[in-house]
Amino acid sequence: MDLPQIARQIKDAPENIFLIYASNATGKTRLSVEYKEAARNEQGRQTGVYYNAFSEDLFVWDNEHIRLDVVSSSLNQYHSQLSEVDVMEKLKPYHPKYDFIFQFHDNPEQGLASISFFMKGDEGQHPVKISRSEERIFIWCFFLALTEVDSWTGEQSDYFFIDDPVSSMDDHNIFITAFTLMNLIEKHFERKKLIITTHHIGLATILSDWLSKGEKADKFKAKRKGETNKYKISILENTEEQYELSSPRNSVLLYHLRVLQILDTAIQEDSLEVYHLALLRQILENIASFLGVGQFQYVLQQIGFTEESGKMADIINALTHQKVYYPQAGVMVPDNKRILVDVFNALMGKYHFVLHND
Image (cartoon, rainbow, N blue to C red; front, side, top):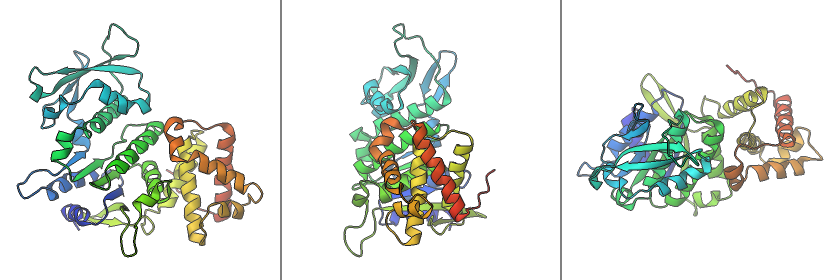
């Protein structure tokens, strides 16, 4: 299939949540553009809201005046319904070190002209240039705040297409972004189609885990026999401009090996964070499923943790609970690091996975 056909396949599918993993340069951003075209109504108008690399192009640094200029677009007419407080509310989980002020055009229909940033506590509001990562997070939170403007999302109410919101973010902020995405999904999935594409295996794995096995997973599953689940997890692959949405379980990308590679690298570089436990948990649950059992504690017993399997399972469950991710995304105490490393090494020793790290 080509990308327009893939876009129509997603549009016509019964599932309202699509999580799509794809390597860089596979066609994620082009797919978002093709979906926008496939989803136009009979009058040729857009029927949904999308966030991709082009969304970021609407914000351009003016280095002379040290401000972020806002490029004029069809979105400007909705800016007047946003305030700094609305955007800061979305930014709070990321703990920004800066504050900001909006500068509007004289005509409200023209919306924002620019945004100036200054350090928290600076009463003189001396302008500063924030980092690329901070800028990316700000634009993402600006978009999240804009999704709550009814006059915008009400007119374009059929879908959200979100393409790779985590580029240039570190692991800690990727984790928080995963939480914001789950909040967006929970709020809208019954009324809108939500398509999320990403090249980041960690983000894809965390969202997959929450959708399929998280504390609220039941709301995303089929309620009656014969119905489909509310979500679908796929990998976008392409060969010579032919595209396919394949299941992670059957993909030649070997999803579990990618996750093990990430864990191995983090252990070698001593850069483990709480979100790595979520990746470890998914590996344990996948092995448990393969072995025909429902609880990953069984796998802990099989790899040698006979007596302490219950306690270890409780710790992993507690630290990968969705509500813990949010405020403690970057924190892992030495004892928990030791558990992760011990379990990882035992898995590798028991099942002899062959990793081909770069």
